[in-house]
Image (cartoon, rainbow, N blue to C red):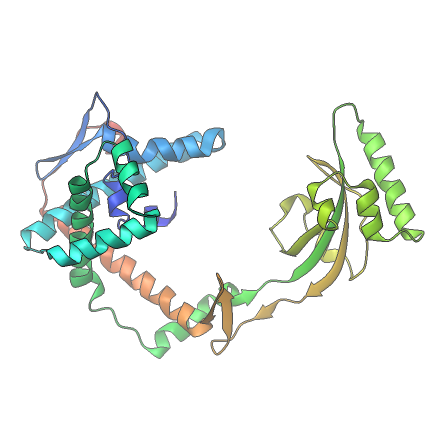
Length: 325
């Protein structure tokens, strides 16, 4: 699961806006008399498990169910508290949010069709949006509002987590793939790859060798794998970073077959300073701002957990399902 289930404010998602109803249900717990049902868990758990297929270990699936249960329980506590504190959302504010959601969904027709498919009315959807907004307002008022940090706070964070602010070494990588197709023996693959390397060293350009021998779709762009950092292509290990600019590797065996690599450019790693800027998702962001946000996030999560614990202490919670106790 993502960190803290992408936090509890995927509220509309975690309360099942786009989830098919179950005919048979089971009460797993009650929170101040309000039930948590099996269908609520499955609305999130089933798509998660199906998306992962057989690649998710059983232990991770069990942990995911527990995490989902905990987030749903917290969501109910937060909404109940928002109601107790008479937090209200104005009609215009709700309509504006609804209109924005329609745009994000791809338009009115797309959203309405999705709601209809999932058996939810427009009014029901708006109610879920309203609940989400109430929850966020409560947390903003009770947790986020008084969070303040100074220069020393983010400077200390930067110093303690300096490795986080280091740009890794990158290389411009090209490859030739001789596929491990049916009928080919390992010795034959290796021998063919070694012959290709020998031909390149004898004067055949790497780009021509790609056209002539590679069996990977990347041959259409010269075998270009782009700028690669450590961990991007674990099958190659650290071999790309041991090559010099212009150097061709010896054959490397992977599950796909045998690869021949070439590095054409190397960009050294760099320790970023707080005064530097960095590009993230197409935006230029000051390193200082990243450090500030990390500190704010840590403080917020600590305060949030403390606030949830206080809500739990005064709540009447009965967990009936053994797996969630």
